[in-house]
View (spheres, rainbow, N blue to C red):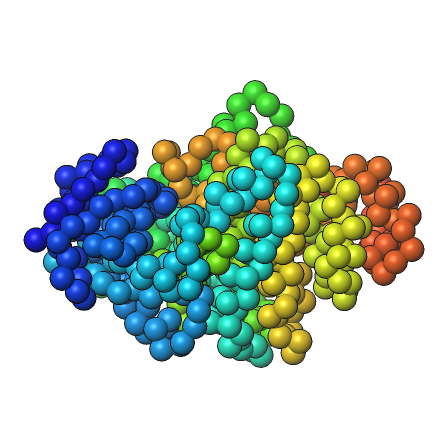
Length: 506
């Protein structure tokens, strides 16, 4: 069994980590493993470290056996059959019998053919924000997305028949928390559970008696699974027929709305569209011509690893053959916002997201990236972040098939809304009040373009004048959109978000 040297790394439970790594089934004889540095700690509790195995550097990921077995199987099924220079191969694993396991990625420098320090792109973005130079991070993002598109997103299919995004609801967290017990409940359909748990005016009331069915037991204790939703169970059990009656004691949307409001404390909420009102419609709306493709599934700034300046992808635990095509790009965007812009004022991030939204309209209208950047970057003080996130959006547009029945910009905003809500399910220590604020700002800005109202109703009039004074296709589009909107800066009947739904169902 190899010797494991953790050095001076600050690693929680180092003895457990060493024991797991000793169980790796290496393809070659190994006598010593030396940990060099921690690359990242994942939101799921995973730990990713750079290690020297003999004379070769490896990237080692330690997590639960359930998660890593899924990653190994997804890698073999989706990634490995495609020869590519983007995704770092998995070269070794432990077994899956114990609670914790490990997967080992190839030497990133050797795989890329370029030596140099191993970093994650999150570090490169943070450095760019400090120095004010976006060239390195934009280059890395553009290059890794070009590779990811060839592996995952280029093989897109347009779903001609009307379809929804309801499968994404399970990823937003348990829809309801229910205390099971005797009594008569109103039988609710799967669709009703999704529709009435998103934070809108029609959400289930706390204390309501409901009956579900059929439900299935999840691999997670105390969680039951329906069609595109999960229920957190407190007490009781599912009957032999899969039905369960209980009293609602928690609703995800309402609970998350309250957590967001508390995250602001005494500070006023930024004025933007309600990030919750309309979420159920986005999930359930049946639209023709949506675009689906394979997806990495967890394309976040910690899973892009650079050797020198060459970026590559790791972590295939959520890789899938069928997802909304733009979901990976939006997940990368929300990851950058939450993990690097956490020290920014939410209002500055709000202005950034609005500048990106208008820039996306310009891209969708056929303007080139340089023209869009020149027109829209003056709308935000976060220029480095604007250029980086615009690079992501341009890549998403570049692989969106022309034959799609939905505009790229609409599909992007829907996926961005869901990505932001997906991050709101987390709790401390992963979830901070600052990060929760930023997630709600991203969701609220996306909703400005999705709720059917005037998307400019909360904008600073000076910013609107700046956009409309130009003589280009983007200015004309905005003028036409404003001409068709109700009079005034805001749409009648849609007040600024104040942290609570406009009305409650009695």
